[in-house]
Image (cartoon, rainbow, N blue to C red; front, side, top):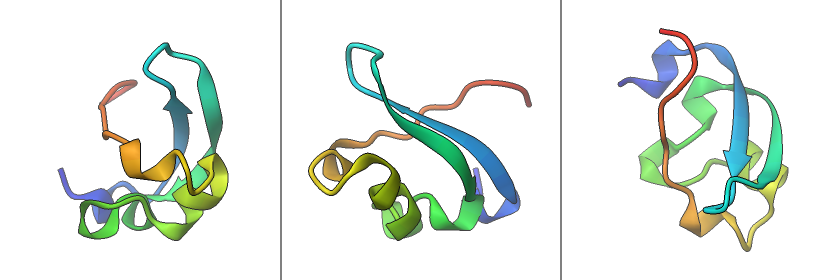
Length: 61
Protein backbone atom coordinates (compact mmCIF):
# COMPACT_ATOMS: atom_id res chain seq x y z
CA UNK A 1 0.00 0.00 0.00
CA UNK A 2 1.20 3.49 -0.75
CA UNK A 3 -0.08 5.87 1.91
CA UNK A 4 0.41 8.85 -0.41
CA UNK A 5 -2.03 7.30 -2.91
CA UNK A 6 -4.89 7.48 -0.39
CA UNK A 7 -5.42 11.23 -0.52
CA UNK A 8 -7.47 12.63 2.34
CA UNK A 9 -9.06 9.74 4.22
CA UNK A 10 -11.15 9.01 7.29
CA UNK A 11 -9.02 7.64 10.14
CA UNK A 12 -10.10 5.89 13.33
CA UNK A 13 -7.47 4.91 15.92
CA UNK A 14 -8.50 2.19 18.38
CA UNK A 15 -6.96 0.65 21.48
CA UNK A 16 -6.26 -3.09 21.56
CA UNK A 17 -9.66 -3.40 23.28
CA UNK A 18 -11.29 -1.53 20.34
CA UNK A 19 -11.98 1.62 22.35
CA UNK A 20 -11.58 4.75 20.19
CA UNK A 21 -8.49 6.88 20.73
CA UNK A 22 -9.41 9.44 18.12
CA UNK A 23 -10.56 9.97 14.60
CA UNK A 24 -10.79 12.44 11.81
CA UNK A 25 -9.62 13.11 8.28
CA UNK A 26 -5.92 13.07 7.46
CA UNK A 27 -3.94 13.21 4.23
CA UNK A 28 -2.73 9.64 3.55
CA UNK A 29 0.89 10.69 3.06
CA UNK A 30 0.89 12.19 6.58
CA UNK A 31 -0.33 9.05 8.36
CA UNK A 32 2.78 6.93 8.79
CA UNK A 33 5.81 8.51 7.13
CA UNK A 34 8.89 6.31 7.62
CA UNK A 35 6.61 3.71 9.30
CA UNK A 36 6.06 5.97 12.31
CA UNK A 37 2.97 7.96 13.28
CA UNK A 38 3.04 11.30 11.49
CA UNK A 39 2.47 14.66 13.20
CA UNK A 40 -1.25 14.82 12.36
CA UNK A 41 -1.82 11.31 13.68
CA UNK A 42 0.19 11.97 16.87
CA UNK A 43 -1.81 15.14 17.45
CA UNK A 44 -5.05 13.16 17.03
CA UNK A 45 -4.24 10.38 19.51
CA UNK A 46 -1.49 11.81 21.70
CA UNK A 47 2.25 11.29 21.94
CA UNK A 48 1.96 8.47 24.50
CA UNK A 49 -0.22 6.26 22.29
CA UNK A 50 1.52 7.04 18.98
CA UNK A 51 4.49 4.60 19.25
CA UNK A 52 2.13 1.65 19.67
CA UNK A 53 0.13 2.22 16.48
CA UNK A 54 -0.16 -0.63 14.01
CA UNK A 55 -1.74 0.19 10.63
CA UNK A 56 -4.68 -2.11 9.92
CA UNK A 57 -6.76 -2.01 6.80
CA UNK A 58 -10.49 -1.93 6.70
CA UNK A 59 -13.44 -0.23 5.16
CA UNK A 60 -13.98 -0.02 1.45
CA UNK A 61 -11.47 -0.75 -1.24
